[in-house]
Length: 275
Ligand code: G3H
Ligand code: ZN
Image (cartoon, rainbow, N blue to C red; front, side, top):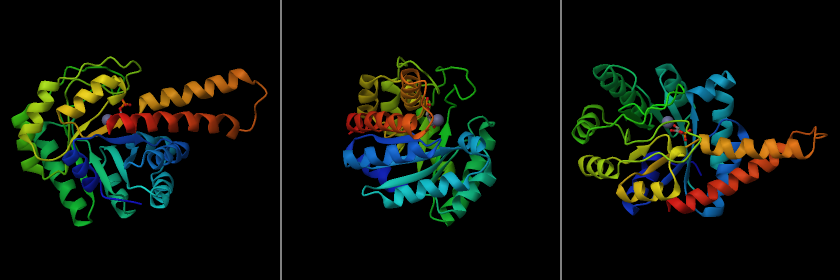
């Protein structure tokens, strides 16, 4: 069933658990994440990034298919546009009835980020769509790992007041696209931001965080946990092994299917860890 991100995240925040948010790059991801959520009996967020839209050349096919998978599931699922820098793409996603969007103005000058985020909130809220925004750029989107960015708690509170966002992504030591799980999160800072703002907090670049680090971050106050690279690594590892095992394979279902299954199992494990 398709549900509002605000509702899922607020409920998770209230219960002190993490809400898994996993990136859908192709349809196998969406079915694997939905099946894992059903097996776990837990809600999940299926998110499509602007980069995935660029890869497909369009938002509509993947977005509508992912929403159909969400509607058919027996657990609550939000479909979310991730890291949108293009406001026209936000408008398009809203027109499809998507649950929520992340407007990413983190690379803009601060005043422009606030002003554009406020405009995006206004256009989305008119359509009943929730908005996540980012304050303090989490590095690594362009392949540069800079875990040094930090969000100041008072600034976070002011940003939420200025923009009216429903969720806030903050920089607390993670970095995008890490293939090792050794990022060190600043739990004291997470606690301070948690105390300063009321909306659910979002951790980007969660692939670089160990299981223990993630448990600590959730206890400290993180709610929406965004994971992509780690699951791509699991998926690709399986594909590599399948093709190496049998060089005569032709039918793509024979190597995509096993990869989808191992990703489903890993997402089930992560959802149980977050809960
Ligand atoms: O928005 C998505 C994420 O922040 C995922 O980052 O690929 O480092 O797990 P990751
Ligand atoms: Zn991210």
